[in-house]
Amino acid sequence: MEASEVGGGIGDHALSEQSMVVPYWLVGLFGALVVSIPLSVKLYFMNVDLEVIVPAEVLIAVLAPIIGVMLLRKAWRKQLPLDLLRHPITVLFVAYMLSAWITALFSVTPLVSIKAMVVRSAYFLLFYAVFLFIPMNSAMRIRSLLLYMAAFFVVVVYVLVRQSFSGFDRQGASFVPYPFYTDHTVYAAALVFMLFLLGLWVFRPWSFSLAVPRSLRVVVLVVFAWALMVSFCRAAWISAAISGLVIVILKLRLRMWQWAAMASTLLLVTLAWRAEVRAFLYSEAGDSYAENVGLSGSIRSMVNLNNDSSNKERLNRWKCAYRMTRDRPWGGFGPGTFQFEYPRYQVKEQRTYMSVDGPLEDWEITKAWSISDQVFIRANPQIHRVSGGTAHSEYLLTASESGVIVLLLQLALFAGAFFLGFRCLVTATVPSGPLLYAVLALLAYVVHGLFNNYLDDCKIAFLVHGTLAIIVRSDVERRRLAKTGSGTP
Image (cartoon, rainbow, N blue to C red; front, side, top):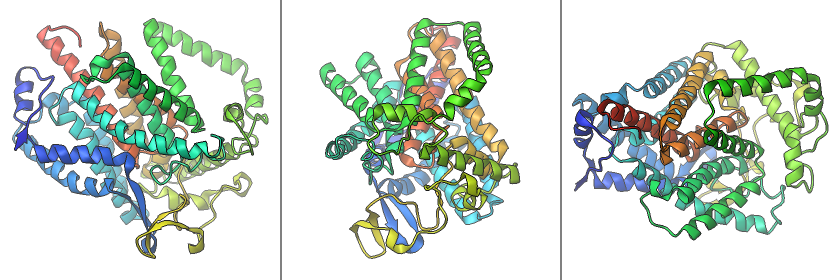
């Protein structure tokens, strides 16, 4: 049996999309993948120091080649809409991926980099290309995200129950999402995506074509908001606040010159008071890892560069990434290699008690549930025996691993998505609900990416790639409607 769900096509584009028929079993398998992503756990293979996210990565390994062959066949038969294939964001995304592949071939550790790029390519196929090319309308795309949210709600309840035993304090928040999410930061990043999705569902329910009592939606929204608050992830708080501010700005419908005036004023004030700003940043405003630190202490610690251990270690990683980029500016060290290369770039005076020296001993890796002596779920998410951790920045990680050219392509990809997304929102008489969600959620992650990096984790990659695809589809539909004179979406 086969299914074809078509929405949003016009003229030849609609005929092209209608010709893409998707088997029911493939739709079901993709739905199973979406549900499995939040609920998957990391199975650790100790003898090779490797973790596999089960069952999500198993399903990805099965689906990626199937989807890849299907899309190649459709492209050969000219059944993929040209306006989607030639869209600037798709072109930028492909250029970014191809450039990263080139750096992988010249990596200091080619096998590590090729493995990393195979995973990223699978994410591109399943989380971007599927959302972009498989025929479905906007409501269907958003409802597929609801599958993720339904499974994620189980994780949120699990985390909140565990946190309740420690009184929702900071010390108990760090690793309580494990084994579903590595720590509170990646869990909080997913929470922000879901919060904006829930907000859309509460205030614009017609975007979903799905009848659920408003009271239930509000309750779930409150639960997720509370979960974000007690996650104690400062980067997630900042990213959600900035996207929330953008909602206010969009409501005000400011002109471009007004945006420029506000930004210029903020820059001038910062420059005029730079000495005071620097003194404030290096004041002892609080330590996010201090004993009995609460919400207020965690908020104050955001600007503490003097003695906050988390901030100081993040600066240490950033400086290492900068030194690595300076040594290999054009090709980097290769995708996936930062964790192995950065320890030797550390400077003694910049290290913290959280800094990694070298491989862990076997006894430091404890087991929560075992299949065998060598295959198990770890009791806590220590870094791997031979891994030093990551850069705590999407952009510095890209620069150090793949060079400045790939970094510029990555930045252009996000900047282009925002430009097109905001243009669609500003010009629309009634802004599209799914587009509004995609722009706000993606903006939140791009801000979060200044402080952490999760694009190599399927639990976040699915959400980021999906929002990019929604923005592209919305822009293409706007252009199609403009050509036919049907109005603005």
